[in-house]
Every structure is written in C-alpha cells, then in structure tokens.
Image (cartoon, rainbow, N blue to C red; front, side, top):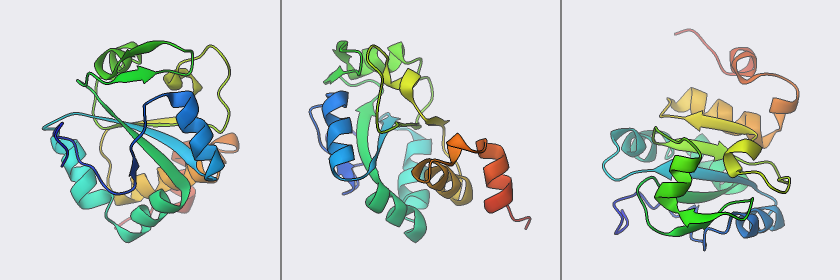
Length: 163
C-alpha cells in the first residue's frame, strides 16, 4: 500500500504520468499500455488486488504483456494526456468521466494526435470482475481480438463454462 492509500503491486510502473512518454516506453518494452484508475478505500480495487490480480494466469499476463500506469481518482499529481492537456489526476479522471473504480483503460500502440486517453482506448473495463472475465479481457486486448470480435462473443466462445 502506498502513501496515497492505493495498492502498489511490483508490476505497476512509476512514471511522470506523461501518457505519450508512457506509451512510448510500453511500446519499447513490447507491451500494451494500461491505465488503471483507483481510489483510497475502494473495496472493489482491494478485491482486484487481493483476489484477482494475484491469480497466476492473470499475474503472468500482466507482467508479460502490460505496462500499467496508475491514476488516483482523487490525486493531485499532474497528468499529461495524449492531447497535451495537463491536469491533476482528479481533474483528468473527471475529464474522462471516470466515475467507478477500478477503471482499466487499455491503449493501442499508437494514439492519434489531439485525443484523450479515454477516446483512444482499445477497451475500457469499468469495475471489478471475477478471474475469468478479467483474464478474458486481458487476453482479448493482448491478442488484439477487439479487431475481430466483440468482447462478449469472445468471452462466450473462449472463456465461458457453466458451473
């Protein structure tokens, strides 16, 4: 747990929150960029960090394939969005209409000029989900399956198993 009250897993990247630089670093590492918006005291964030992310398959896909940047829903650090706008974390989250934590924003390898991260997202996962849905989302994004099939169909065809 960090001084800001947010979980700080060792796969989380500490950056200056200049999203263009972060995307360049993610690309240099051969990884997909993921922004995760969280808040202190969020029971859903805690569930993800304590129950879902530690799952061996999910932990492995995060470490191998994702460059994860954290934004505090109520934080005061400066964020430079892809369109060049510089705001605090809380004002950036408000600008993106982020109202639920955790919200995971998956970015493509290239972001067009003049757009916000939320507009450029390949996928947005608002909220806490169980292991299967989370693994499916990370796999769907990693493999760029969003170019071929909507997530619900992908999940049903590849991850759903009635219990």
